[in-house]
Image (cartoon, rainbow, N blue to C red; front, side, top):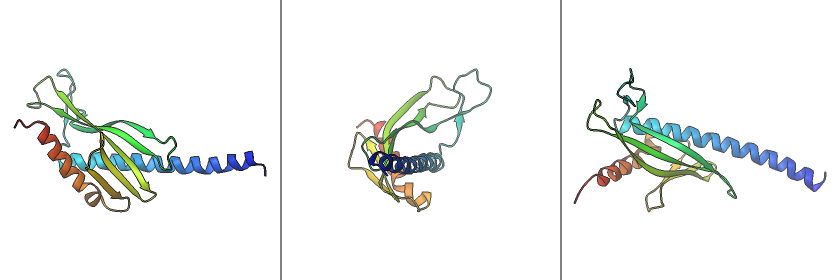
Length: 153
C-alpha cells in the first residue's frame, strides 16, 4: 500500500472519529441548554413579536454553535448562551444578554466548559455523569455571573 493510500485510509478513520466526537459535543450542548432552562427556571417561552399568536421563543437558549477543529486532536464548539430580558411577558421591547462559551474535549471521555474570553472559571465534565453532576457548578456560576452583570455597586 502506498503512502498516499495509507494516508487516505487513516484520514477516513480520523474524519469519522471527529464526526462522532462533534455529534457528541452537540448532544452535550443540548443537554446543557435543557438543564439550564430547568435549573434556572427559564423553561418558558415568549412571543418574539407582540403580534405573534403563541409564545414560541425560549427565554434561554444556546445559539450560533461553531465547531472548532483545525489542528486539534479533539474538536470543540463555541456558542452563545442567550437570555432574553424583559420586565414582563407582555412588555416590549425585549433585550438579549449574550455570553460566549466553549465546550471542548480534554480527552475522549472528558470535556471542559469555559467562559470566553477565558477566565479562571473552567468546568470539567465527565461525559458519563448525569446532568446534575456535569452542569450544576456551571449553572450556579453562570447564575451569579448574570446577576452580577446587572448589579450596581
